[in-house]
View 1 (cartoon, rainbow, N blue to C red):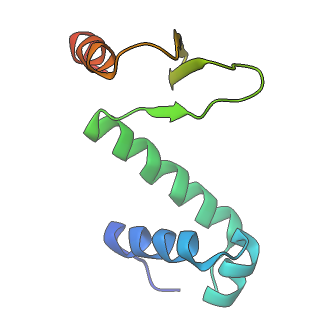
View 2: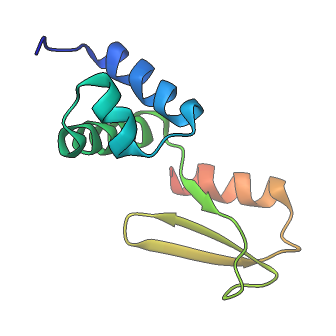
Length: 97
């Protein structure tokens, strides 16, 4: 198996995302080890989060109705749904998240 570049992996991950296939099925079709695919996907996600400063914002769940939940590593920030987006952006900039 030829070694792929980071850009090639990003392309494969995007192809998987848009394919609608399970990771196992997609990997089988591409001749990729599913465990390795998952590892590379996770590492690229971590690298992107660190380099861009973006954090994942969870959608509302039944456990958190009316709340905005922001997670990064061990940090969990729960805010009322009425929190203004500009305030959240200022907070994140000041914390250098």
